[in-house]
Image (tube, rainbow, N blue to C red; front, top):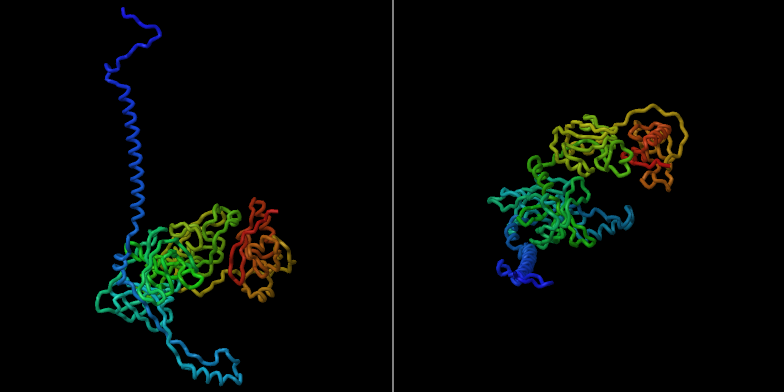
Amino acid sequence: MVPRLCGASPRINTGDLGVNTQAIAIGRQHMAQMRLIWISALAFVLVLAQALVAQARPDSFADLAEKISPAVVNITTSTVVAGRTGPQGIVPEGSPFEDFFNEFQNRQGDGDKPRRTSALGSGFVISEDGYVVTNNHVIDGADEILIEFFSGEELPAKVVGKDANTDIALLKVESDKPLSFVSFGDSDTARVGDWVLAMGNPLGQGFSVSSGIVSARNRALSGSYDDYIQTDAAINRGNSGGPLFNMDGDVVGVNTAILSPNGGSIGIGFSMASNVVTKVVDQLKEYGETRRGWLGVRIQNVSEDMVDAIEGLETAEGAMITDVPEGPALEAGMLAGDVILSFDGQNVSDVRGLVRVVGNTEVGSTVRVTVLRDGKTQTLKVTLGRREAAEGTAGNNGSSEAPVEKQADKMILGLTVGPLTDALRGELGIDSNMSGLVVKDVDEMSAAYEKGLRAGDVLTEASQQKLTSVADLEDRISEAKEAGRKSLLLLVRRAGEPRFVALNIQE
């Protein structure tokens, strides 16, 4: 019998089991060290990756500039302008000093002889047979256009076509040899932060290149078809019409405008997106002019306060029709008060988006347009006309109404309104077919005044129903309240131009 010691734990011979506690501790320490090494290595890799990304910017733009420079051109235009024909307001016509000033001016120069003025700009060649793109404002009104190439060669150019809406012009030069040219890229792939190069003839100093990044996308300045890329690449006077390149050497924009308090670059330049330019250039090349689709409606954006006033409208999106003159929309059955939700399968978020998608649609094509009317959606088929042919025309969709009885003016929703009489039509210059209520005064403390309503405005509809009397307006207000609506939608016309305004009707 083996004696056992009381209170003592039996000794285990771990060596017999192949395990050593000291070895385990060393192993654990080794594993911890290995983890630390791996973490350090991973951190190093991440830092290295960041450094490599930072080095993605080329050390130099020289190779790219050398590749694309032969396709960039300087443009010089000249125009004959009328000379001075008199004292130009220095003295009144018929003054005894008139002859004296005429004689003085003639001694100082050419008198009333025509003189030639010149202007400078930029452009770029887009085909080996000599098509050149520039801004319309660079060549507008010019009777002579001279293209100077990077090599120093000069060739005269003729205008193929121009488009004032996008400020794009297409020129053509004749050369006995193929010309270096550049291609358009996809401007939709340009991201904020991407590197870009601007090339041109700034301030008449000759060929110049500047670098920057895409600062913003989808900028609008003043046109219906604007889609500008904003860049901080230096753009100055003389750069107009020049190309904005991506790092692949493709043109993603045409340098058009700058925002500047002093006329020089402050890092806010605008280039018309290439995806807009290519459509214009293709049409100018084929037709010598643009051919944009035309729907034939007057529209406005849907505001937040209109959502509650329009049955079935859930968000402030779409384009509200304020008027339907004679044209494709009228023939398709569209009505004032309809909200256009989609056009040819594309959702409509606002007026700008609708104008652009309609303009880019082929003239004569038939498309489906979904509208919201009386709380329900309807899909109409519209065959588009041509915008250029319709510009400058105006239609009147008003209907002749029976004369209204004499009624007293009344203050409603901060507006003093009364019936529209023949006398008021003549005084306000309103079409004889228009019916409605005339605003005679507006409470300056009212919401109506804040929304821009003024004396002389005409209310033609309320809740998308025609108004012929004060009682009609009161009925529409009552109906809206009974339906639980907070706002009433009014169609307001000022100088014949319509717009919708939503007024709060809650007490």
